[in-house]
Length: 496
Image (cartoon, rainbow, N blue to C red; front, side, top):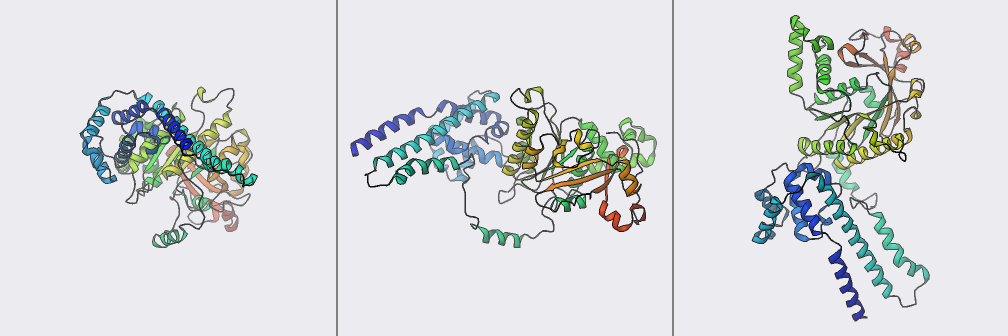
């Protein structure tokens, strides 16, 4: 038996020499040295240090991870510093390792090729895992004496395969629900808060979805074209940024200048047309209001990025880069409070859809990956999606394209739409011209059928104001009977 085991070990060792690609490992590390955070973001979801077969490559990758997450520049000094903090300083006392690192820094690798080399490394990693699994099954099978029952013998192959399939890319494994619960309760007691999520500036909406926009969650708002999705997004983004929480606005259609005009208009109360044409200069009050708004905008942590035409994978990389570079982590390694606003989920190009992938499947892919990213990087996300034609009259989850796939993974789903003539007449002329209907809420109470939040949108000022709910209006006798219910602006022609 010993000779057989020795022969098996020799065969396995010979196989292990094959199940690695040291050239690909060197290329990925060289790509990280050359292209920095850009390349790291692309490969970080695919690789971890254990993906590398060579031990020294594992350590170098861990050091690079440490550097990228601490916003340091990549050079020999930072590598050595990271190694010391990770407890690997002895490896770089060998001059051969320093020469190896220098050779990696000088090795030319195209940025677009780094992800392909990373995929090669991942394949060999999976191969090695399967190899170890097969080796274990083979070893256990050799121990069979004939006294076992059939179920015991079947379990030799069944149990390790089930355990292997339980593992995901993050090596997350099932655990008992009670593990760590004492520490969790202690944390809650030491970190009391009045609100679980990030306040949007719309109190009734926050209450309906369970206390604002929460970490690891995607809250979804749907609307028909030209109703004011972008105005809604900008109003939330500005409200949040004013509290000091960093916001990333991802826009698929508008320019940065369009957003600036709208934000200045909403803060200064100067019409968008007067701002975009520069005519505010001729009105002293308007000029001062615009200047004050500009100073306010310069001091809030609002980041804008146009993602028009980008592949969705590239959009995700924009988010990851912002979280790592701009937001950062606290002393415990947790992502600092932040919000991503994505306007809006849709097909980015004709290549996003094929004969085998329908539009609803492509949107399902987007919400799945956006949700997974929010969970992994621990940020809150508010996203928008377009209602289909049923949304003109229907107020349910099937009024949005690909609704099932979108509803499964969003934390809350609300419909934002213009009020009908009948609703305006019933609620009263001062109850606003828009309504927000929270349909689904995983963490909050939502709203009863027939109830909705009244909103008024002044398109000329890109300003959205939350008013009473429909039930509140009924209880108080209508908007006209409510003291202080006068709208900030009467309805004007919308510039959407």
